[in-house]
Image (tube, rainbow, N blue to C red; front, side):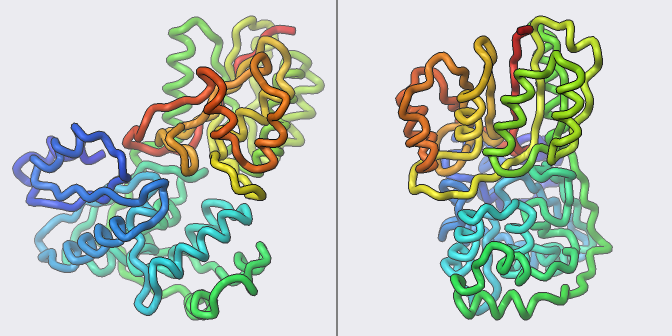
Length: 389
């Protein structure tokens, strides 16, 4: 985003600070430094750390030091929550990280995680915009959340948050007795939302999952396939999502069964055209962000686990791809995986039970998708190539 924005601003750009993930494109980093921008890498494995904490402190200092006649341009994309992790006064980064890790392992959704992050943060939930000394803030946003809720993307540093009882989220996942008293007290104190003045802010969503799916469909056409976009709102536990895709591969050409599958889906589906049933090379395209309730201690990510679970019950000749558009899936160097039944090993269930999808796929030639950081994040993309059976 910064690489595209900086040349447009040209001499109007007086300076800035970028908090970017560890492992970002080195050439881009060097290019941005020449544009009078300070580039700080942090949040390894998409987790807040001392490096991203330092970046957040510098961003806060810059915002506070601006004059009314300045214009503050804020670029937000997926991963922003981990890259702007300044806790409220009295909390440490470790306090906050412990709470988020426990919620993540329990299977909390991205929306729930971000509501808790907002309650524990000094810059999220509109606070970055509110403390700025300038009279004009323009925020350009790449959405990594279903439905593009600007108050939750990167935990909404320039948007007034909605009132949410975060204690209910903690109770929902049975964590009331597992979090520190200090964290629970902060959540209780923040049940009532502070009213912030964000009238000087323009929040603009410039990219989202829908755009990614449309681009994938265009590429599929170029390659001679018939693309069919079904949903940009795939959510829920990967076990349930995998059942949907496996069933779709078996019944897509049977209208009655297809109608039944779509009616029972836990996320919105657009009914494919009747002509689809006569196609020989169709690719169903979906996007969203499923979750994994972690039970094991293995290394993996939701995309790699989803691809393996779908492949287990795919019909012969069908292929499934699941990947994160940011190029990183969980604490692994892979973006996701592309799988079919042909090369699955008999020990797959053992690896899945331990949430160890990366270790399994690392031993399978060609199944992992490895792109490195892409510089963007508009959630995940799922491709299902089916054969006419």
